[in-house]
Amino acid sequence: MSDKVITPVAHATMRYFPETGAEMTVGGVPLSRLAARVGSTPFYAYDRSAMSARVAELRATLPKGLGISFAMKANPMPAVVHHMAGLLDGLDVASAGELMVALDSGMSPERITFAGPGKTDAELHRAVASGILVNLESFREVAVLRQASQALGLPARVAVRVNPDFDLKSSGMKMGGGPKQFGVDAEEVPQLLARIGEAGLAFEGFHIYAGSQNLNAAQVVEAQIKSYELALRLAADAPSPVLHLNLGGGFGIPYFPGDKHLDLIPIGDNLSALLARAAVEMPQAHLSIELGRYLVGESGVYVCKVIDRKVSRGHTYLVTDGGLHHHLAASGNFGQVIRKNYPVRLGSRGVGPDTELESVSVVGPLCTPLDLLGDRCRLPHAEPGDLVVVCQSGAYGPSASPQRFLGHPEVLEVLV
Image (cartoon, rainbow, N blue to C red; front, side):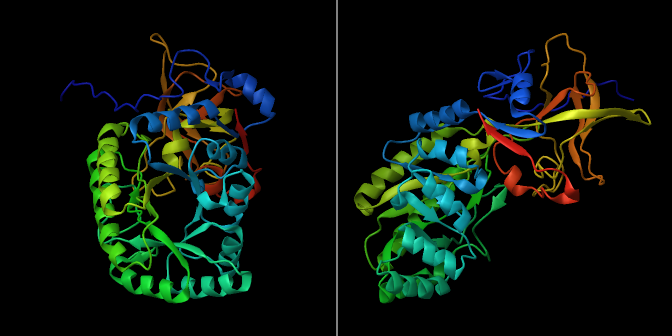
């Protein structure tokens, strides 16, 4: 039998919440004080300075002239949206509810886009009345928007969301390539463009989103090049010049052990080259990318309190007042095939060089074995009353979780 010791694979270094050996802070506020300020646990806390730093990093690395939009579905908390609206070039919404938050944020309607495969007639009418850009995803939407334009006396602003004939390799979720409910198949886009012209809609460009949550810069670059070249070919059939080209996003963040931070340098270099091409090949087009989790995911934490500490047949469980009803993604039930841990920490004290650690599972109060926030994590000794923190929780948190499950209270959110 081998005596070789297997070292557990580590999580990537937390850029905005570094492990210092001291109590965690959010926005400069110690976690225990923040918990007292919020008044109860569990809660999500988002650090506005971390969001601003992420945007500044992107601005410094990506080329000037490239637009950056925030996909609100990643975190639709109104205070977060308002903060991001002051930093970025646009907002993308996926429902009429998100549209109202976007309009309230102060973002100009001209810089708000609406994507989604199941827009209702009422939502499309509201979009036209608001003056936002609608990303068309079916032939039906053309007819509805034509009626809305005639009823309101306003030309519907439209772009075509294209389902490309390629995907973003190694992406967490593939949003394009093959049969998809998203967008219009690339081979059918010329026919759709003709319909747009016949309907008298105000055509403005294309939206091509191949996939999400990708940590491989080379694959992001490949998808961006293919998206640009596809748009260039389709532009030949457009009823008017392309004014906007949304190349999608796909930028991932490290969630699990072994994940690495995305290298922005080659992505920035490639986008610079595409901007130079567009200046010649589509001179009226403004190029942009659309990001969600990359902008906010690393800036948020989920905080819950240990209610009980119990040992079952030699294994220790920390039972908390939080769980999958608040943080479905951390439980592994939001797209994971093989469950892996998000970074989990004891927020009341950090890990120093001499800190003794123990293997524990962090679970919630729900009557299901799926209610698991961290499986066999290495944490300092914790007792009831201690705060447990799930990092990388700024995206797809409360709005992506079954908060009414088993009648537990909904989670609170704060922007610090």
